[in-house]
Image (cartoon, rainbow, N blue to C red; front, top):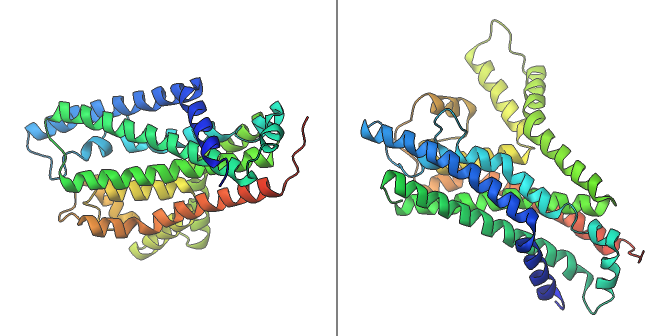
Length: 315
C-alpha cells in the first residue's frame, strides 16, 4: 500500500516527540510505580509472616496496601485517557490546519492515511505499556527479591495484550469521533463523556435494570440474589471497562475459578484453593478478549468507512 509506511513513520515520530505523550507517559508511570511500591511493601510483609500463597510476583499488580489502588485499577482508569488523547485530533486536527487535503493530493492511497495513523498510535500505546510493565517488574524484583516464574511471565504477557486491546478500543473510538465531529474540542469532550459513562454510570444502570427485572426484596432467597447479580454483570458487559476488569482479574489472579460475581466476592474475602492452570485462565477470559476486539474493530470500521466516503476540501 503506497504511503502506508511513510504515514506510519511520520505519525510515530510525532507521537514519541510530542509533549502530550511525555506527560501521559509520566502520569501513568508515576501512578504505576507508586501502586507497585506500596503493594510490594505489603507483599513483603506478608511474605515475612508466610501468609502469601503461590504466584507471589503477580500480587504486585493486583494487591493494594489500602492507601493506593492496585496497578490494574490505575491502568483501567488511566488507559482510556491515553487512547483518547492520542487520537482525538488525528483527522479533524489536520482538516482544520488544512494539511489533510495537501496530504491526500500526494500519490498516497486514502486508506493508507487512516491505517497508518491508527497503527502508529497502537504501536505507541504498546511501547508505553510494555515499558511500564518492565519498569514495574524490575521494581517488584528489587523489593521482593523474587523472580517471576514462566507461568507468571506468560500471564503478564497475556495481560499486556488485554491492555493493548483495551486502550486500542478507546483510540479507535476517539478516531471515530475525530471523523464525525469537525472541532477537536468537541471530539475530545465526546470521548471523555463516553469514558465517564462507561466508568461510572454503566454499573449503576446495570444494577437498576437488574433490580427492575429480578426484584430483590426483604424476603430474598439465595437463588434470587445470584440471578440478580448475574443479570447485572451481563448488562454491565456492554462496557469495555467491565470486560477489561474481568479479563485482567482472571489472568492475574489464578485462584479465581470463574467470573461469577459470587465467586469474585468470595475471592476478595479469602483466597480460594487450587489455582487454575494457565490454559484454563485464558479460556475463561476468551469471551472478554473477543468482546474487546469486536468493539475496537467496530469503532475503527465506522471511522474507516466515514473517512473513505467523506469529501475533503482544502480550506
